[in-house]
Length: 250
Length: 250
DNA sequence: AGACAATTAAATGTCTGACAAATGAAAATC
DNA sequence: GATTTTCATTTGTCAGACATTTAATTGTCT
Image (cartoon, each protein chain N blue to C red):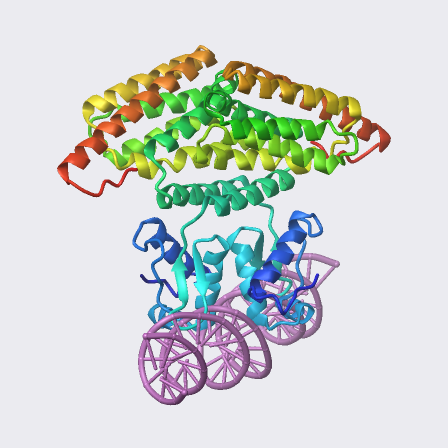
């Protein structure tokens, strides 16, 4: 494993890339211990701070974990679903927030992907998933709920639906689509009337899931998508009228 | 922006988290320059190497970019779709590779999500997307093609299909599902007979896309999913028989 | 012999100080 | 006015040192 000292890129970036490639290619396996920082420094012919910067880069991607003390060191990390979820959500949220993605585009993607889970979830959902959906729909109907709490409950509801498909890979992929919508959803102020309609649709989804009717779930999701878009449009229109310039939703 | 020196976590991790939160919350906006490393070190009351480790963590997630020289420094990075793609693919690939995800589970998720694009892609695909699909199907029919090249072309075909939906958010989400399958697909040796069937299905998808028939696209994707699973099953069965122990596919 | 406490070696975490290299602005020169 | 030179600023890298953590080892007592 060598690096090119004449490469204009940072040495620490090159070292991180070399180790990352080794992990992806399977040359370094899970829980395997990397050489100590001092040894790595010697092998790559760089100083220890440079090696440390490289290791921190890998740690930021959850590719390695470090342990202090004797027999400690850097170990190849088994990327857990939870770590992957969190990374995916962070990346998705920033991607939507920084690139002027329109509400409609994000919304379309999110519901299209969620409909992909509908049939599987209706077929396989456990009593537990159904109970969670019911509980969240109930919570959403309570009057005192803040907008943030309403949105959080919305996410929990849809997450239960997605998890009902019993496919962790799908849950992982959907996490980014569903959770990254939350900042956009939080921009909407929900009236009691809005909430009632959403709760109605959520209850419909729960009913369909209880009846194991995937088509019905998908159909109501389409309704929910349309309603969400309408809602957002009216909110943004009102906001644009209030302040002549500078709409934040493109 | 403060950190807790008594926290058992690394100082560099805390500093990175503090800056990351500021970016996500919008307190630091795109292209804004962070204070210099020396200033950050003073503000957080740590040494410069510690600050540097924190910045490298953020750079690894493409949250910042650094520039050397006068008026250089660390700048909040606009997370591009391309950067997000690549991160997502890396994470997805490792997640599948390290967690003993079964071929069937990954396959199911991938095709379910891809079917979610079918209707939109059939409706909106440009002539360009269609041409790419045709070209890749044609390439896949050529005899001399290696298994790796065949798989790469397969990815290109499906990518064109997904991109046809004209929703960059969806393309981003699907990138992880489609591309992360490649290492698993590469484990399969494709016979001429296998390839012919896949090319037939791909051509069918292109035909349906040309006719703007989303249902047909979705239907053929389901066929392709079933065929892929059958294929994988027979390959793994043969492998298990060849060597009594240690199947790599769970 | 077994349980508990002290020692110790190995490793990461952090700091200090320094120099190299890049870079754009400002000053000097033509 | 255009070009070159100078220069201050900032990141990239290095060397060496010390602090802290941790688990294996050793020592001690019952």
